[in-house]
Amino acid sequence: MKLFKSLLVAPASLGLLAPMAATANEVTINDFNAAEEIAVTNSRVDGLEARLNNFEAGSFSETTTASFSVDTVLGAIDGASSETTSLDFQFNIGLSTSFTGEDSLDIAIDNGSGSPSIMSSGIMGFDSGTSLVVDGVTYSFPVGGASMVVGDSTDLSTAFTGACTYSAFTDLTPDDCGTGNSMGAGGKGVTAALGYAFDSGFSLAGGVTSGNKEILGDEADAFGLNAAYSADSYGVAVAYVSDDGGTATDTTYWGLNGYYTFDLASLSAGFETSDDGTTEKSGYFVGLSFPEVGPGTANIAAATTGLFADSETETLVYEASYSYALNDGMTITPGIFIKEVDGADDQTGVAVKTSFSF
Image (cartoon, rainbow, N blue to C red; front, side, top):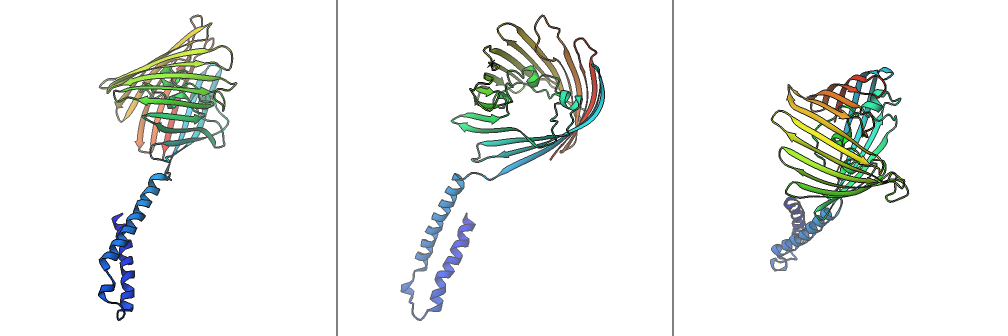
């Protein structure tokens, strides 16, 4: 602002002196006090500077950042009455805008290759649409010392804190290290949640998510609570969700996950239960990440394919992958997976996922 002030004072001063030069024979030195006039101009510039600062502080930021990514997967599957080879892609756009510097409006837009294959839709979780689709809108802002999150087509994981360091290769492994029904409840309708992070490493959160565009409407609503603690090398989190399912019967979910980081690896595990008043089910997840295997990261995991009652046949999924960044904008991840199928041959697949970000 000092340069701005100088640029204003200089021409103003010259403008004041110009009439003196033009009518020097009519003006005496006692009729004009240059120092006083410059002081007046400085005062006016100070007022303009103050108003400009107030405008900058009170107006919203016009800064919007955009991120783009493209994921492609070439894969083959054998078993479970299907043998197929496919090449699919998914394009993602992320827009983030801040109005105050402390808030964030995030918009996710997806586009797929169309004609979904078993690999893209059922295993890799790709968007199969050929048109740009808004996949989620989330707005987070501070409320006192807490953080409020509201969103559409988003889930409670935007506000809940989990304890999972494993990065899944396929969509077969349960979300959030096996706690997707509790830590990540919702995702189809409107979500509102409030979280608070303490300086000690503890955090608490609570929220509600709906099955449509209306919270507390006639459709399904889920209420959740979350508590977590993280330290330098380990973390643990627990979540509780009550989901009415749009019916008179509520289903409750309890989820627990945690991680521990060793010198050469990071172990993540999760356990989740459900109870609808009649049947109790459970599922689990275990994953290992090795961040320094050559130039890349190796991951292996085993998990149940969902939640199972004691009377049901439990099926498992196994996966292993190796992720290698060729540069800042390109990552190649080859991997293999085996999915058990009750009453049929196991589903076995190999895939190479290539990710571009810019």
